[in-house]
Image (cartoon, helix red, strand yellow):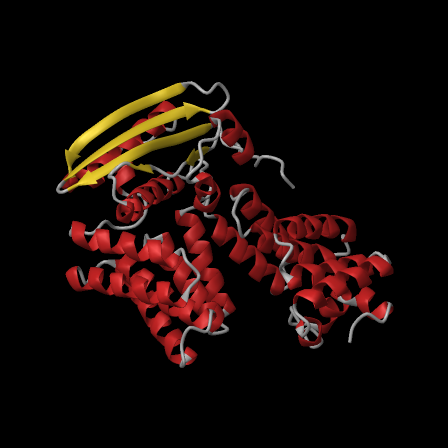
Length: 402
């Protein structure tokens, strides 16, 4: 499970940029600049790029570059720093060969903040040239989402994204306020509308609202507007695909995810979402392939245990019980406090007729959340009885289901 990802050409990882402004409040700007670069590289199609959540797992650390490259499965690492003060920005970037640890390219930018998008383009072009990706300036301008005319709107957008990284209701509210401020400055800013939609959908998903249906409706309408304003935004398509899931519109969700992957073939979350939903819809082979691809692209995501649970479920239904158990055990190491991990561990063990170990896994689940097993009594992850029966066959065979 920890093997580096297999790419058909050398991959790149963009590490979080150091914030040298002396102001912790400027952290969002450094993170946002790194995320913009990840998106730019992802949309190049011929430059594999490691997912943000994996490369950002090194934030605040000073690991050896060759170890980072090995752990991420990346040949190249882009690191640097940013200092933003007043209307000026100073950015230092270095591209490192992960095999040798040597610098491939480095440059300092000391420019007006008004030039920030030109700086990003220059970094992307120079990195692409250094790793021998054929890309012209004209091609680069066609990649990814539209950029706003207002730098202040972009700044509010980055602030909103930073808030949404936290799974807290107050963070979703602050993020929404930032996106609304961006939209007030630039009403046609599609990605700000996508952020606004995501804040509403997070409220709906994590029960941060007294009216979940109203939150879903608001999220759906904002996501539709985001795609209408900026059809080339992967983020907008991802948010709209999620809204379709909550509205029980799987075909429409598939459509949005497929379009997203045309725009950004290295989006791990899209591969995971599409893979999981295809498995649930009965396309298990394609679903498993998508989930595996997501794990390759996102090898150090703190939430990758959820990827493993999806993959183990799909493998279980196909009768591949030993491999399913391996993924569940890897998930249990990453997320030992999650009762669902232990419940699914019991399912895998029971299917292998390892009954006493299955009982022990259920006991661990019960100790973490006493009502969890009872709530799973009527769980039907699939939309047909045959696959649900295959998933729970061992539990029923050994009388382990309540």
